[in-house]
Length: 245
Ligand SMILES: [Zn+2]
Image 1 (cartoon, protein in one colour):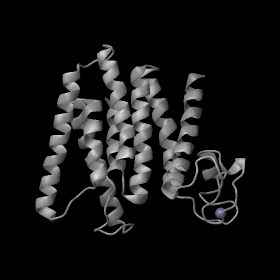
Image 2 (cartoon, protein in one colour; image 1 turned 90 degrees about the vertical axis):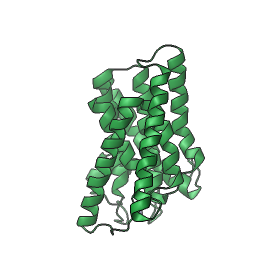
Image 3 (cartoon, helix red, strand yellow; image 1 turned 180 degrees about the vertical axis):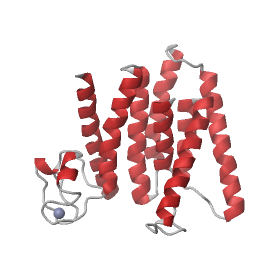
Image 4 (cartoon, helix red, strand yellow; image 1 turned 135 degrees about the vertical axis):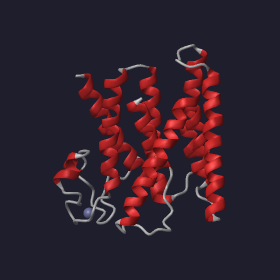
């Protein structure tokens, strides 16, 4: 019963994230107009808006004009409930559940923003720091498995590792490898996880990044010079760390 509820909440939140990122990027209100096809502008009916199922039934196309619905929205609709469900199986409903579910959700939203625009502003990143504040509150109410120092060292290590790899890429390729927004998220995520965990998050994130970029370049879907967004890969690192360790 709880599992079904968690999956349904995940599906609703996923659909909200997709719509929010689309509307925020275009300065459209999140309430009006009702959801519509970006191609033919037709208002979508309830049957077009069922997360995951509508995409599968319509084979990823608009019912009215046949325009392709971007697969990233479908991926978000699958990943969000899946993550909530697996997290619930792993740790049950607890403060950590909400902490990780919040972080993952916000990072999925930022991933969409990163993929679409490559520009992440301070206000977008602030949403991740809100999660850090919740963590600090838990630390001070002695409800955390690690002391504050563990998270502070995590911050130093995370920032240090990314700065070092940033430096190496800069020397080899003579160009800045990431955007400022991408970098601002590193301290927030590093503090969230602490020493051991942040190292794994960065390793898994980079490994996912290298693997997917290689597949996309080798299959000629994108060009070699394509600037790959970093936040989706970091989100993959977070997902692997939280669910597997
Ligand atoms: Zn359409």
